[in-house]
Amino acid sequence: MTEYLDIIMFAALMAGILLGFPVAFTIAGVAVAFGYLGWALGAMDISLLGALGQRVFGLLSNQVLIAIPLFVAMGAVLEKSRIAEDLLDTMGRLFGQLRGGLGISVVLVGALLAASTGIVGATVVAMGMIALPSMLRSGYHPNVACGIVCTAGTLGQIIPPSTLLIILSDVMSNAYQQAQYEQGRFSVETISVGQVFAAAILPGLALVALYIVYILLRGLVRPGDMPPAANGGERVPLARIASAILPPVILIFAVLGAILGGVATPTEAAAVGAIGALLMAALRVGRNRRLILAGAVAFGVLAVAAGVFPVRLQRGDLDAVQIAAGGVYVVLAALGALAVLLALRAVVFRRVIQDALESTMTMTAMIFATILAASVFSLVFIGLGGEERVAQILGAMQGGPAGALAFSMLLIFGLGFFLDFVEIAVIVLPLVTPALILMGHDPIWLGVLIAINLQTSFLTPPFGFSLFYLRGAAPPEVTTGQIYAGVVPFIGIQILGVLLVWNLPWLATWLPAAAF
Image 1 (cartoon, rainbow, N blue to C red):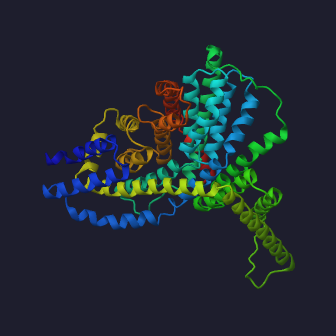
Image 2 (image 1 turned 120 degrees about the vertical axis):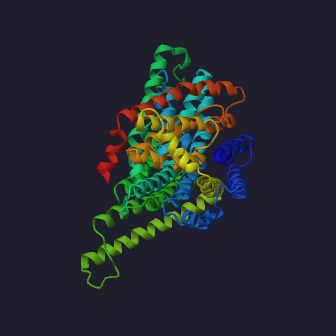
Image 3 (image 1 turned 180 degrees about the vertical axis):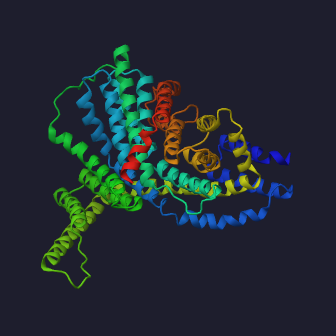
């Protein structure tokens, strides 16, 4: 039996999670139990767990993962300040006259929120509370409405910045380095968060386009499922459109532009995004809006000017122009700092920041606890021979590298029925991706394929997390069966998206190659 301990260990993990135990504790508990069982049976060298302390230190000092709480905070502030409501209402009025117009609005707003928050749960809940009742009142079939809301919410998994892509970039970079070491290369290359972000942009937009095409076609074939909205087609003032859409778009360009342009690291860009979200929330809920807006503009001008004409005030050889520019920069920075203080006062008074920080701490703790527990699990699994078994299984697949990749994608899709994306990313992917990279698959392209597959896991009944989020936010007349039935066509679209990226690799590789 000892030669099958690794398989039994994985099965025990599945059983523990399905029984409803907290995921992080389940992962760590199963790992510790099987570590000692393997040691007692002589199947594992217990000294292997001595590497755990080094792994924990590496996790806590990982510069890539530090960006996660900042991006989560950015999304939580935007969600708690109800900016999504303005977006949904404005877009609904713009597209409401079309059959499926409300659905298109929800998808577009989902894409904008995904690119400015990266938090699936917050997006699905917000849309479930705001858009779903509006769609049902307009006569949308409940299945269709639920499917659109669920799917639009999961765009936060694939459109950067996303916590999934940050975790995935770290996992793929480690797997790529491991594969290079096994090839005998000791001057190894790495994969950055910026490259993964860049690789996910075009596939993410392609998925948005596929959703919209499906909605339009369904509106033509079955017009009764998606009638025009009652208030659709009415004239929306340009000022209202600009005030609802421009701030998130500017925030997206500030964050992603800084990363893709090489101006800032992902952590620095995440900090910019968090401050930008704070200013946006204050403009939405607070007073002193003109002064806060002036401070936001001052920060933007300072960022551009300092990049075009940098000044080092500590140097002693500055000329008059440089000193004057430095003085202007100081004034701009002071104005921006004042705006941040006023924004903080506004969001504290409205209890936006308190709720946002609570959400941020809860989600960040869940993610890091799961990653820490997965470190214990992977050490024990490797000690029991699981890594070699996975490599043998992939190597024995019919069809060579393509067959091994197809098997891995089906495995990830199947695990999505039971596990969250974090567990799959930090437990399963480190076991299969090094072998796939050694077979010749491009690591960045492979990462995007896996990201779309993991996004699908959020939609897949019976345990897709988006389904649970929507179930909690949906009106009582919407049944769980309607939610499950609604996502089925979109799961098919997700599979089509995987096939599209599989057969057109340039969708994932062109932009990283051009930007980096």
